[in-house]
Amino acid sequence: MGIAQDKLGVKIGLDESVASARMSRYETARHEPSAQTAKAIAQALGVPLVYLYCEDDRLAEIILAASELPQSEQDQLLESIRQRLEDLKKNPSSNS
Image (cartoon, rainbow, N blue to C red; front, side):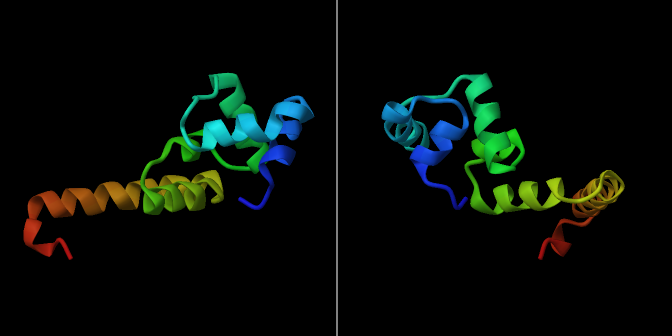
């Protein structure tokens, strides 16, 4: 997201001497950050917390884009997605 691991670690309150290594372990999933640390990382990166846990890149992009919309437009987007899913259930052949 455009910030070095050591700088991100320091930004969320880790000691400079361990910041890069700790952030690397989080990024490679060798260790999982606490909920509080994950929230701090998300806040420092300016992304929703759920973005950090998304395993699918496309879905992560959708989450990030939707989070940047005003609440009213998020509601419209959600309704549009629900309607599309309902349409697909009624007519599976239109799944293209």
